[in-house]
Image (cartoon, rainbow, N blue to C red; front, side, top):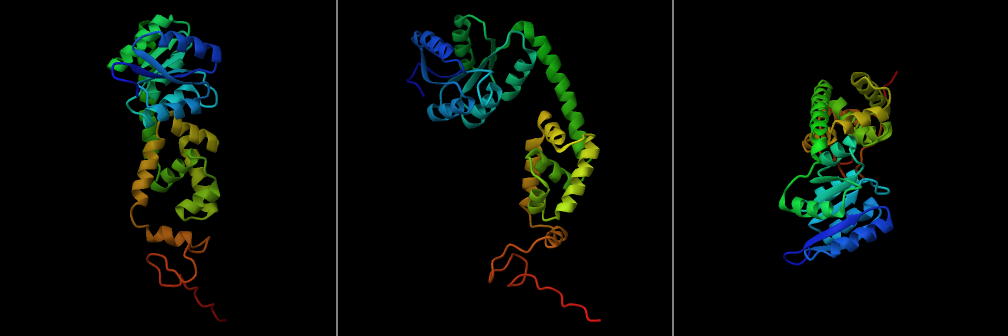
Length: 272
């Protein structure tokens, strides 16, 4: 944080000359102080975590981690930091992504630096800055996305409990073996569940399923549901399915919860 009465800023832009030009102008203002600059999105997030500034001024085209992803990370890790994004003029997609990521302001890249300075003060006061000539398009786009998200939620709600678990793992990039390990089922069973999920979502690949979840903002809901369920004692049927394809995790001489010391005994071979 900067001293009292002075707003602290972290600046992220991939062009060093632009960084230095903006920094020079901002530090010419008595009540502004630039604490750090970065051209890489991940580095920008790290600088925000380290300095905990009042405002982060980010270009949309940051390297490795773009300005939208960096905004979401900064807002989750440094909640008090407001973010202003600089992107293309009348780029409605960029504006929608900025707002959804948690930015408090959006400015065209070619706007005067006086507007940037005014925006920094405004978002710090709690204002949200959207170019007036883009507001109508933003409302229409977000309304359409809300409608699509509700439809996506209905589709996901129609899945079985196990299929929702599979979908959450698909969104994380898990393969069949990882799903089997996580859910105590066989890889073949995981594969069958994946095929059923793809059919119900009307998509053709794992990547499309993951995109479906992330596009509609459902990943956190699915993971939260799975976490709540896994915090309860495992279902006996699920546990039994798990032992069909792998040994229990207890080391020799240690028991698993709910199983006799020494693990599960094999049934005696049938005699003929």
